[in-house]
Image: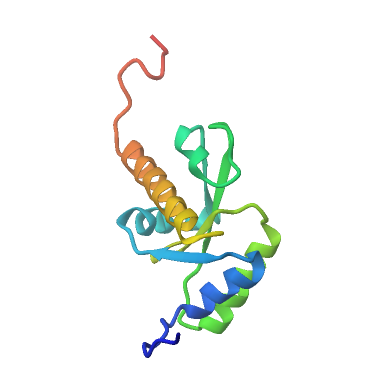
Length: 146
């Protein structure tokens, strides 16, 4: 059955992910956490997340010691060019569970809608943890270990 709606301008990004990875579902968010982190860490090219138990919610991850890389791509209104950059990043970085568009949002995927939704929930939780943890002052004894 076909709908009568118009696809999002970003549909080409979803198609690039499906083509490169064979994903069964692609989801995209516009959260505060992804917007803040993608802007703050753009110069580094991505965000490394490690040491959190919640990482085990990502498909194929079996330990909290896993290091998850979330690349940050510059946003663009040229969806053809951006979809080509997305495809290149996915080809060069197998094993990713998502990526961020700078000051825009998170893209993630899965074999099923349920898996993609779980990835959204895990990655959004972890990004919120990173932002909130960075805003907390260290305890007085944190540097001395006392």
